[in-house]
Length: 301
Picture 1 (cartoon, rainbow, N blue to C red):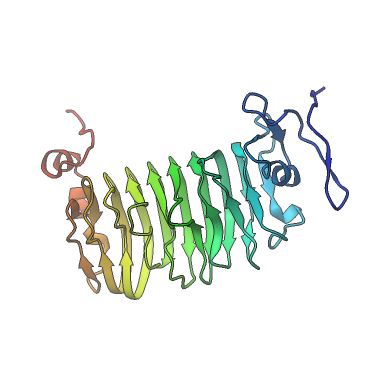
Picture 2: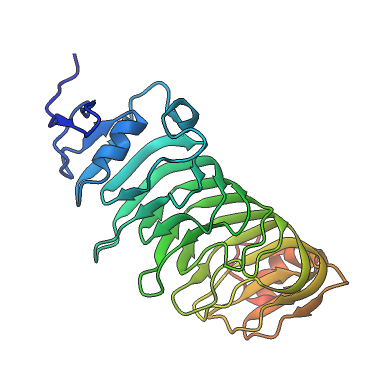
């Protein structure tokens, strides 16, 4: 029998919340396996919440909860979260309700958690400033929705994370606002946003891969623009009309497959360490290493 030593708490509706085990400390975290308990315990400041690593079914489908079709209130996460590889599916952000990751002057960690089939119907889908590791996000952005936003003075960080998004709205915001991306893969399809990531000193793409297929209907698409950018590969097809912009300098070499950019577009690729290459050059490790200086291990004979 599983040992239970968590605090029982009653909500205003009268239901009981009980973690399977744990006291919420780093060495003895709350272990949960339902959406209701995850929402409840993750609001505790500075506690540790782990989705049950031994569960047979590691899926929370919000269609099976009271939050089906859209959350009934915003969720404010203050805890350190280990998702243990769990998936949270069918989260819909609308009616002013969304998930906020609160840093409280310390960048908390959320790791090994995956959001599938997210649907954004408003400006903010996720908000705040956490450190994400080994997480992934996939879904559909409608209206003026973007995936992540945070205040300028408290950007979030992502390490070894993946994003696969369909963009069919008309947002005037970046897909990722004030976020630092490292070793991440960002795949985008649909309508081109104004920018992939907010071009300022708080944001960056380091050792990242950008792929997908976007359509630009006039205006300007800023692929990136942070001075800390380095070692990033952009192999993203862009069609339509307008301008693709990479005029900001980068810290180290970042390469773009210009064969994937439609000839109907204006391409401004003038920033220092921003290099436009052909598809053949992008796929030639010897050329990348010896001519371009892009860090890659060339195969030996």
